[in-house]
View 1 (cartoon, rainbow, N blue to C red):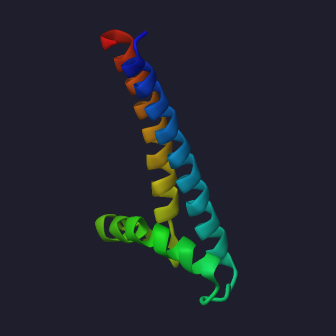
View 2: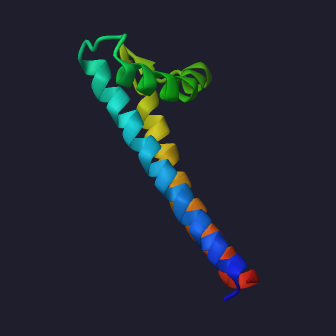
Length: 99
């Protein structure tokens, strides 16, 4: 397998790792919503700033709030799981076929 094939396999693994890290950040955001964290804490601000653009778009697109419960983190979680199951094998398949 040429070097380009290994590059695509490594790219697939990096994408899967980034998606896994983002999934855990979304989980942390959901857990933080259950407690009353200090809004000036740098970690809380980082988690909020990283996840809010995605969650805000989902809240605008889908009516995922029901009786005060926000289901947008679940939608993001499912989308990340779908992307992990689709992107990784697809890039690996492409690298096997073409390279």
